Amino acid sequence: MRILKILIVVPVAIVLIAFAVANRQPMSLHLDPFGAATASGLQAELPVYWVVFAALAIGVIVGGVAMWFAGGQHRRAARLHRREAQRLRAEMEFARTHAPVAAGRVAEPPRAALAAPGGQRAA
View 1: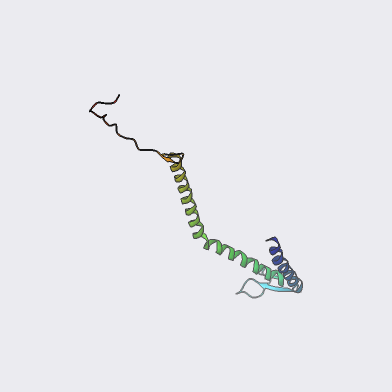
View 2: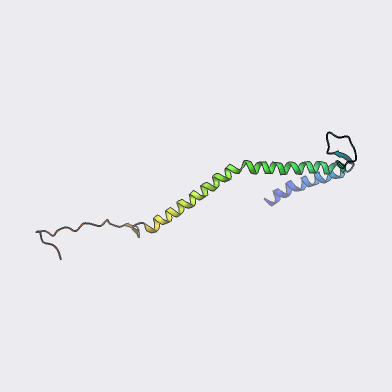
């Protein structure tokens, strides 16, 4: 598993580093779509790779949050199933400890006292 991780991470890192080195030139980023391009603080001169990496990072974060919300119903169902399993385990353990089974034999039900033959009671 560790080798697979290295085989994936190393080439991706090499590509990202090559991209950053090749795209160091500054670009103008305007954050005010309706205003004129003024020096009002709503624009910035950033390297191209910063803008691309920031967009990727924002996409990863938004995607992760969306997947977390989408998995909410599955986590809720798993929580309910886990509680049900715990309840059933406790019920099974209670039945094992309180059952009339001893050493593999079923205890006989109590019998009513019968009169001795001849109508006399046994002492």
